[in-house]
Image (cartoon, rainbow, N blue to C red; front, side):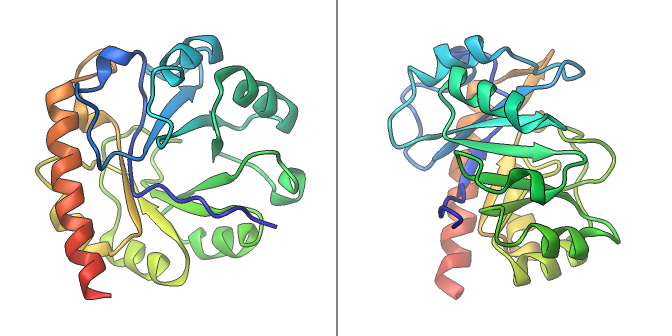
Length: 215
């Protein structure tokens, strides 16, 4: 059985509590921690755990991992205190049946996206639509027409180049259930700018409220 969990507004790639504005935005309901050595946002599960400990209980901490083995992911999640995992890169759903926390499956918006969603339906709790250029954090927007078709058939969070200046237009174009931003909320070296985070959350909340009112 898949546990229901789908972020509405997620900020990914946190490296420390200083990445987030204070007070914590009410509409921000999920944050992501990248455990991938090739990313400028890479953190250890121990580093993530220190941030998780300071989060409001209502906020979902997500481990964002690239092609981990299930046992590696389980250890990362346990040490960090994350309550969901986002799987990026190659993975087969059969290996992840029964994983102890909900799975968000990152899906590159390309010609194979439909098959990927079909394969993971019933195993993943939802899908993160992102640009196919890399496993994440590219800052490149997706093909909005293709993403909109995918978001119409499954519970999807939109990622890929979202920021305060474009999230409202992209939500209108794609109609996702939620949004996920990282690189466009940074000032340098993979560090978030708290004011950009605050502005993004406010703009995303407006956009999603408007979209929800039209459903």
